[in-house]
Amino acid sequence: MKNIYLVGFMGTGKSAVGSALAKKKKWRFVDLDELIELREKRAIADIFAKEGEAHFRRLEKKALKEVAKEKKFVVACGGGIVIDEENIKIMKDSGIIICLKASPEEIFKRVSGTTHRPLLKVQNPKERIELLLKLRSPYYAKAHKCIDTSKLPVKEVIAKILKVVAGKNKK
Ligand code: S3P
Image (cartoon, rainbow, N blue to C red; front, side, top):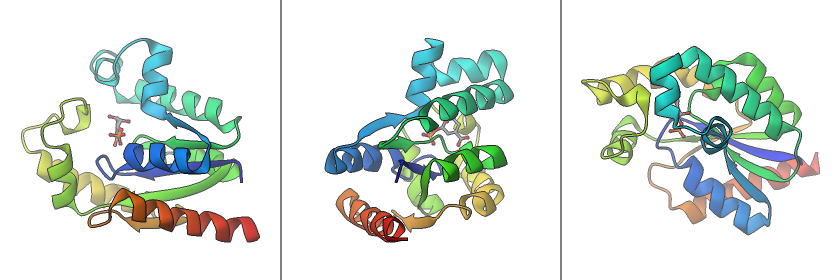
């Protein structure tokens, strides 16, 4: 097993689960958005505002390619990474993809009060969440395994991921 990639919509717990999972496995953890901000020396919101989403997606792919060269990383990916076929291939070739899911209501609850997500800075974020979830669900389904985190504590999500990883290692 090379890397574990956590994908899924904003607010599904990728960063919280990812950092705890990395600690448990004694692997390193990277949040891809944080890596992009570090490399670019500015916030994601600033990249979206100045150069737009397409440019952000190019930087996201570049960061993913950088991490894919590594081993034993738990990678928390941005919610939109899956909409690019090549990104899916890069992740599948260099590890396992776990998709974290949550209901639109739960996602709305979790992201309310946060201000750093440009795609949700709209008049009706709840509607935007529902629309994006619908558009993206076929892409999220390409993960090796999907886990609903709506009602699960981080510890239980990690236990489920470890089971999937153990099964994959046997093959
Ligand atoms: C995005 C999700 C964000 C970040 C960017 C775009 C998306 O990451 O990459 O704002 O397209 O869903 P999180 O999923 O970590 O919030």
